Length: 115
Length: 400
Image (tube, rainbow over all chains, first blue to last red; front, side, top):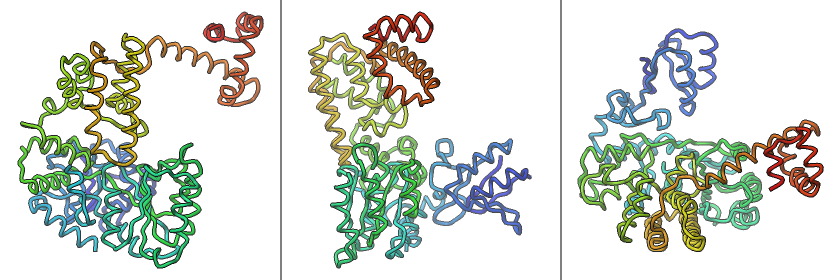
């Protein structure tokens, strides 16, 4: 399974030239120094997913970012992992630890982002 | 209503779409004359309208709103918006214009509206926020050139859960974890649906399970038509999995199947009731259809709860014994339409090839005259049929 982490970046198996350039054109970025791919344009995630699905013979799992602590939200262990359409929802969710801190903490932290 | 009670007053009280909210706030704060306007695109129920209202309140703007319930023809748009957009007076300084459901400004009803809006936006001296469910249409292309597009997406289930728990805590009520998960899953990222489902559960007795909460539309309709009392019939209608929606929001044939008004209509027109009885029932449905359209246009969804009662009390007596039918056109008629449609398309395609015209033009402009001529000239009709120019189906259609 290939984990596409939207917070930390991710690695991919070797891709052919056409697939690589198609991914770059559709908002994927490659950092030579770290060897990690990152999604530059999150609005194109569905296209990136479609290209990868076609090119790679493996399951692709998208891991969204926690809006409060910026770590992985923990999609693979999420109680909604079977029903959440990660291509349709926002690229940021909330991890289990931050969820425990409740709505008050969420609004406090998000209001800092909105300042 | 929970939807009204928990409608956020500030952008910080909202949940989901954090980056998109920050982006719109940044754009509005830095807006100056000549800057692009803001187009918010996203599915229903993710908070586009609520956000625009909360943002205006937070930033001290006076919000002038124009939504789908307003008439948005060229003249109306010019009359309402022109003074706002072109005046650099003291009043205009703190005004924010919000145009909701801008993707709905097209077609014959809003004739010229979009063109007028584009012209006005080019010269606007105040920020304008536009909201749309979909930006893929041809008519949206030019609008997008004048706007910075920000996308609102569906809210992830965990964040919906966070919000649901906040609401339940504020209301001082408890709900089992199973019910909470089920409601969140069924809401599919739509906050409005989440609150409506929570409301439905809180007003009902016992645990929330699909069987106790909603019943499949075919069972609900059959139960409605066979109930021995009006209260039983009303209960069947209100517990149906179906809903009342405007046909313009049908996304699929499944949406159409789940529309309660459509299910009632299809069942009635396919019934063997007398013509007067059918006419009475259809009059009621027609009246209710208008009511639903008004409620949808005015976003007064809380009024939809009265529709079941209106229907049940109006058609209960005349609708006993009807059986649910999913298809609104009787089979005999739909098969004829299908056969004749194919025959017309076939002939139109042949003529189009001969005359180097489009099939659409032949069907729309030439065909009505051709049919009139053939109806009066039976000899020509017989000749065309005899020489294989027209099909047997087309021949029979003309004869009818």
